[in-house]
Image (cartoon, rainbow, N blue to C red; front, side, top):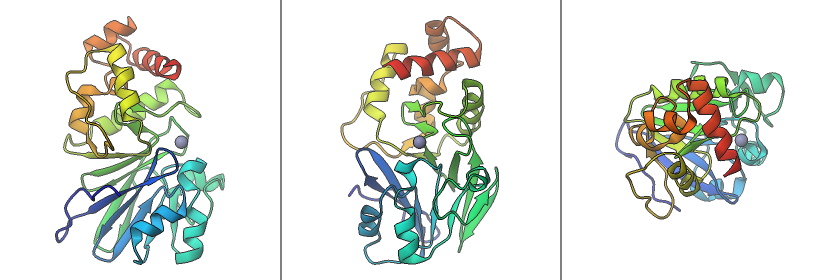
Length: 247
Ligand SMILES: [Zn+2]
């Protein structure tokens, strides 16, 4: 188990990454007695991380099986509400979903308040969950990369990533997969990356660092524009995303 990052002091949010499946992460975020799990891919690692404590709620970023596979077992065990987007709720594609959230809505768990960002691109119902300076990005934003465009297009994903990129540079990023090393290797084929990669689990990243390093967030960086041979953000982003698909 990766040690919890973030503070655990009074009023602070504690985040615990929970590795699942081959390279997925679920996360616990908690304060006082409120414990929320993000994207439980499977139940067992989450139960282990809970260590006998009671779950408060389940927060999903999107409907893909490797993010919601553990939802029903955890609902059966704890009877907790399941939050995902209104878009996914309308399509009944997150198992056990009880609440559909729209862009900008907040959910309170005791003194904890989470805000959701609707960030379509990877899927049309994708959410990012923001709790203070912690951001759970699902498969929208990865360290060094972004999600594949399964349901949206480059223009849509660019708009979503632009909103996330504009958040505080202090924002800590907790992503849905451990793809960082592969993404950084790809990034170096596009533009120079001055920083080395530490070995091992990489979460969390920071938005400040991703703005400098992540070629999928640098559609307006001269080096990336030169690589793409374009100054049009959608074209630059689309070309980099396309090259990552082939990498
Ligand atoms: Zn996905």
